[in-house]
Length: 372
Image 1 (cartoon, helix red, strand yellow):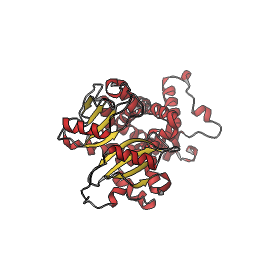
Image 2 (tube, rainbow, N blue to C red; image 1 turned 90 degrees about the vertical axis):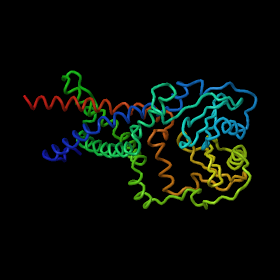
Image 3 (cartoon, rainbow, N blue to C red; image 1 turned 60 degrees about the horizontal axis):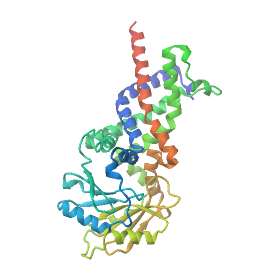
C-alpha cells in the first residue's frame, strides 16, 4: 500500500499525519484515558463508594412505589426520572432525578429498608470518591465544557480517523515484512526504537481506533452524522414520540405493576432500568433478553399508566437503522466482545498517550536535527 506512494505524496501524507496528530494529541489522550476508566464505570464506582452500592440482603424488598414515595417526601421538589434496578441481592437501588430540580440528581437507596445510603450531584466537579466517575464520564465526551466541548471532541474524533488512516497507509509493510513492521529494535538506538514503537502500536491498534473514532462521531456530532445515515437506513420512530402530548388522567398503577407486566410479557428478559414518562402516561422498562449483545439490553417494554403493555421494541422488530444505532454503544465500549472486549478497549485507551508521546518526541528530534 505505502510503496504505491510517490516520494512527494509520501512527504505530504507524512506532514498531514504529523500535524494532525500533534493538533489532537491532548484531546485524544484525555478521551482515551478517561475511556479506559469508564470502561468499568459501574464496577469502579461501586469499589470507590461501597457504602452507596452495597446493602445487606433481607427476606423481602420494599415496593418500588413506597420507595419512590419516601424520596418524594424527603425531596418534594424532585422529579424521579428513572430507577436503576439492583442486579444482585446485595446491590442498592439507584434513583435518578431530573436535572432541572437542582442539587443531588442520584439517590442510592437500600431496597430492603428504604434507607437513604447516599446522594450526589453528577454535574458537580470534584476528585472525591463520589464525584470521580461522573467527572471522568463528562471529561470523556465533552471535556466538561458542555456542547462546545462535545463539538471540539467530535472534530478531534474526525481528525483522529484521518490521522489513523494516513498512518496505516504510511506504515503498511511490504509483503513478508509484517514481523519487522511489528517489532521494536531496541539495539538500534533511541530514535529508531521510538519510531518502531510508534509504528507497531499504531498498526496494532488501528482497527480499535477506527471503531472508537467513528462511533464517537455518532455521539458527539449526531446532528451531522445521523441525517445521511438515517436517509440510507431509516429508523423506526421512537414509540413515545408517536403518541399525542395530551394524556388522559388515569390512576397510576406504579412502577411495580409496570415491572410485573414487562416481566410477564418477556419472562426470559432481565429488567435493569425503569424510566418514567409521565408526559406520555408510560413506564419504559428496559430489559436484556438472551442473545442480546452488550451489557445493557436492547428490549424496551412500554407499559401504560394503568399497568398494561402498550408496545414492545426488541431486536426482532427493529429496522436496519435501529440496529445500527443500537450497536454504537457496544462498539464504542468493546461490550460486543464481552469482558475480553472491555479489557481490550480499556488497554487501547492508554495507547493514545503512548502514540502522542512517541510522536511528539520524534517531531522535536526532527526539529533539532533540522536546526543543526
